[in-house]
Length: 295
Length: 343
Image (cartoon, rainbow over all chains, first blue to last red; front, top):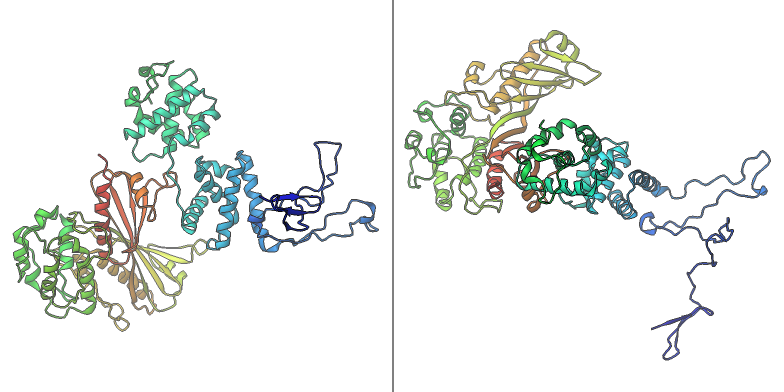
């Protein structure tokens, strides 16, 4: 049980008085700063926290652009221009991290997914087995894998929407990365997407729960063999919404889910015959089952 | 069924020669619908098996005949060996016993003992289903530089669009195939598959003898070839036809290094399959992404074959260099698929 004496920088054992460390440097914050004490200038001189896990721990010195008048030479150009080449070895990696953060921001992904994505990217990048592929493609695929691994999968089309890479290329990189990192991901289920799709459509919780139940039941009863879980989810949402007060058209659902409306129609036709069995027992029907649209 | 009779005959190989008459003619139809018919005594008698100590539930019709006491070339026996290895699955019980029999029966082959190299199915019954070859891709070297423009202008059924692709795309109707002919003289021939009934005879896949000095004289006339319709033979025949076309256009074309690069087969296990279960247990081999492709992509290691497995029970096998690999791969996957049958 060592106690730190910050005045002298010692680590002292309180029982026997032995001084273990001497002049140990305190790594706490340099100044005591309070929130918005008219502090437009942050007096801290150490800058941001490093991200040693991801950057390869570079200790380069960077000189920022000057602020006073003395930093400009006669013509108005700044005297010290060179801010380049801070870490050429991992420039591409830093670029990719920036790209990942940008993509993730567009769909409001939380920090943990971004961190996981960065880690995956770093592993892939260091392995160099996918070196020939576009970094953006690898970044997008890592984002997809990270979402899957965190239990909140995004469809390929959703990732496509925030990335400049085509679905085909993301799919290819996805498979290559799984092979390179020797991991695997869980299979997607219909329930993974329900909350997102239903919220985007503005459906109430009751309808969302009903749609989840319908989709699960449909898969259990094997009414939709071979259909993508996304399509089944979309059809289930359609059925649930049509049975409730908030009716959504196939086109709207197709837009949100990234599924063609003919695909929703196909899957809907498969689950329609057993509609009565698929609804949860406590569901309140606005439109009864026999009045459901039949396409 | 048609394909089965030719399949039978495929494995009853005399090498290269026009087949020696009697041993091969099958009186009666060879139905290969399932194991019971394989044991139809008429087959066994017509195959003139000397040793019949193997039990009658053993299917011998796939053993190449004892007929080639003549020269089974090495390559032919190699081909036999792969086939035998494939049909290990068809001889479940008498593994040990058939071993000593086999060399006697086959004559030329020195087959290694039948320990299956894939550890999966110790005692399994044969599936009774045989994948059908759907496509063969082969390459051949014509060994002379070609002027693609003149070929495209003179030949019929040729297209050449140098901005799009640097080869002439030529098609022929007889074995319905497409060839890509490059200016270096190399050619890729795709699309060959077996057509319809054969006469019950076939030629074995030609051994890898060098044919540099025998450019375009086929070992039998094309007419005879048409009778022996077997996918690999079709591919070779088609490649020869293309080479002849090129030769007729004035280039000194030869026919070197004909090699089959890829064979695609398909079949149906006739029951629905639970792909989710399969991907869970065989994670390191399978890839199932319904968003990307509706089928499960199974990359088998032992014969290096890729299988596309669908919910309906249809299976596509590809990546084989030899017919036997396809059969072997299917025999390996069948018991696994049976385990994931949907109830």
